[in-house]
Length: 248
Image 1: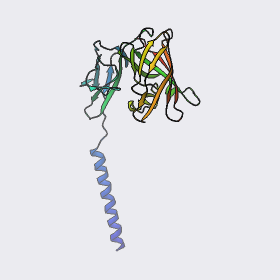
Image 2: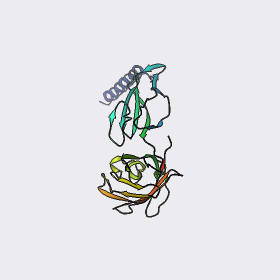
Image 3: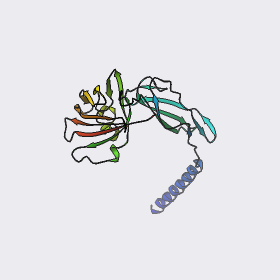
């Protein structure tokens, strides 16, 4: 009985060794070449709304062989989806270029196109702005809430403007919560820009259901900045916002 058991174990061990070796032999290592993406032009572009946008090409190769490049465009604020930038509507457009190699692996690169207008901050406050935000109670500077791109102020009629996020992108950009967490809908009526005489309606953060009011709204055409305080109806909901207009 013991001899039979030993022989059986020995036979199974030899069988396992043969099967293992055979499997290794039939599955040799192979090399895959990922898509090499080359993008012409800048990865970040500012563009005047209402003028045609011509995108620069992106090419892809696999070990020197050309690959087809697919293009998709998404509007961050409007929810736009398509294959080209809608240059007639102010928004941050994220262009994604992708290509798939022969083994099914996808590579991609992106370009951000900010479409908007630029006022002189004396007769118009419209523009694309980089935002810095300090929050109560300590108002400490944080890299997460500095240099946030971008806040849009769009002209909706004469002397009337709408701001894309009244709290300067604190949740939407700084915390990357998405645009549902921007303070939306604030309308700015400019009675006298040089005198900093404005009437501003209340904004609402859809993701939270809270509201915010803007106070102490001041425009400085020399430094190309707009500064104000956003007061929201939740704990520590006071934000000091400074917007710096992008020159393009």
